[in-house]
Image 1 (tube, one colour):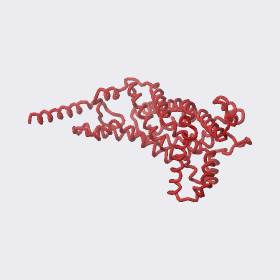
Image 2 (cartoon, rainbow, N blue to C red):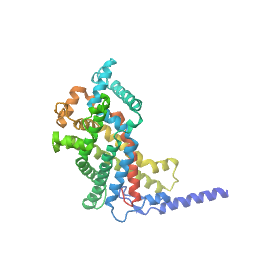
Image 3 (cartoon, rainbow, N blue to C red):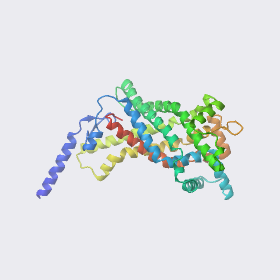
Image 4 (cartoon, rainbow, N blue to C red):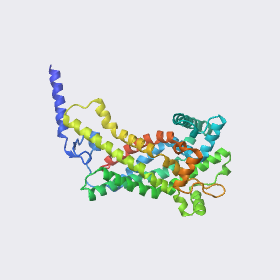
Length: 382
């Protein structure tokens, strides 16, 4: 009896303490949220005293670096499956096995064939080329990812703060998130397009040379040589091939940020309801508390990527080097879409979708998790 009374008293004290912690008015939820629950929670929930614009740049760069390193093998696979070079080899393999083109297959059979071929290629890379091949292009990839993510998150975080402070009385709203995301997408795409073009061409160039069995077949010696040859053959504008497809990709990043912010709003309101109810958090409540934002980031990326994926394929094709006679196979956004559709069928617009989704969903969860964590450590609100 004494133990039960003490236990009830302890639970009551805990609930009262949680109610007392409702001292921070959340801009996201419009309600009260707890300021802290533990030493770590207290550290991560600090309220920023002054804006730190550099914190978004740092957090985005660290998040991008970590996620890119961990998911590099799937990025290699995705790039290969998106290129017409590998698509031609896959088509020849299907013909040799008596399998009709995807355009002549039903959607279900075509999808299953794509998934099967994806995993066959993934598992064959280390057997044919060694384990290091799974991390081929990681250096150039980090060279692109780190500044791209740093710029993207910095443009979004600072853009959201500036827009909300100047046009919405310091309050966040869905239109604020959308405006900040569009701004971040345009800025990031414009600044980093040359980096991604060089990275794509080097990765495909090396793969073609290895397939030919001779390193002398390589077109580019290094990144600088790739830039020189591109400018010499195509002009400075050549470094911005695929930029229109990148701008089309702003729809994906905007949708992703919007869905992620809405997920955070839901989690904040859920937390507020839990605290005001006074009930003890269950195991599920604690799991949602610690993993909710990871799940929100992954889910946001999943839906935004699957709805807007064809632009990824078009962007990769448009960044490819010219043909041997110097002609460009893909000369514009609409022409690239129509050429792929006519020559390879609509299924090719989703080439590399499986490894792309396997990579970007966990990558987004990792990247946004580290982004939020670093921001809180810097005393800056996400």
